[in-house]
Amino acid sequence: MTDCFDVLGVGFGPANLSLAIAMEEDAPEKTALFLEGQAEPVWQGGMMLDGSNIQNHPSRDLVSLRNPRSRYSFINYLFENKRLIEHLNLPVEFPLRKEYAQYIRWVREQFHQVAEYGARVREIAVVDGAGGQVYEVTTTDGATRQGRSLVLGPGRTPYVPAPFSDVVSPRVFHLTDYLYRLRALEAPPRSVAVIGGSQSAVELTLDLAKRYPQARVVNYLRSYGLRLKDTSPFSEEGYFPEFTSYYYNADRASKAALDGYMRPTNYSSADDDVLHELYLMIYEQRLDAAQRVFVQGNSQVSRVELTDAGVRLEVAELHTGEVHQDEVDLVVLATGFRDLGPAPHQEPYPALLSGVIDRFRFDEHGHLMVGADYSLRPVDPSTPPLFLNGLCESSHGIGDSGSFSLLSLRAATILDGLRAPAPADLVAN
Image (cartoon, rainbow, N blue to C red; front, side):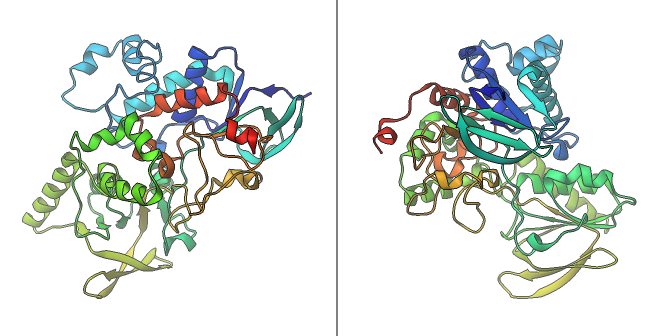
């Protein structure tokens, strides 16, 4: 007979890892199994750039906001690895991305007993089990696992906008594959286009310029220029749990207004250190009459064509209507990730839920109905609980974006939901 776990998790990145810690510390009586598609997962492995940081206070880690005494904190990781004093002496505000990846790996290695790696999920279904309906997850090798509740935390889907969405080529790729694709190159690129105006776009432009000093690197973005991130402490309160509650209870029009204000704190903007470094690099290249790095604002790629030599881009100037062509060896898409919703740049629901999505409710705007505890609202109360971990920015606000800001508090909220009885309104319906 197949074992049935109290909690079956899909994905074992930071979101579900944080939940696993919360379960060990606060609900050790519950059984859990987390299925991770990667055989050897590395947090943000495709973007482990030299010198890049996490843009997040290190104490907003996997546990500390929920349990500052936890042994799985970033501070304790440094202490146990004999780097605490040395780290505290670093002349930087945020930890290196490499070090945070090592911290996540250090924690993950202590939870091998609740995880299966290389277990890529193919299908999710609801079946009859002992005591009622349960989730049955089938992996690509045909194996099945069952759980009385399901927590989906596979990470967000990369956003690949038109006209790139129809292009299949190793020369055109999303930033999540950046380092992997570069390692597979047979020869250094002579020219690269970076699409987008985010922190990642700036980091990639700088990295390409340093990695391939003879290459031409062009950053194309729709806005006039690269924008400075909003780091006002007043704006940063959007990453407080109080804002999450406020946002969750707002109507859709108010959510849109709040999104407009909060967007520059995390999207389509960059930190001053990388902006200054890139601006100075371009200035010095102009001074030397040898410019190889360019930032082209007000630009929209309207057409993409694969050629024998590389990739041909048709680029429109948004305000003059002027169109020009650019031929590059590679295109890197720093275009972010899809959120849940009905808009063209969103996805209506996580693709892994296609086999069970008819069991859950959508609101009149086409948004999947998500409870305050991150559970999906079922059509029938007999449907076992299903929670979304790290996918709910459209319902819970900016704090549920890809950052670590509220990761551990979200894990606590989901754990409370896993331990709670079904809401009265669901039982009544």
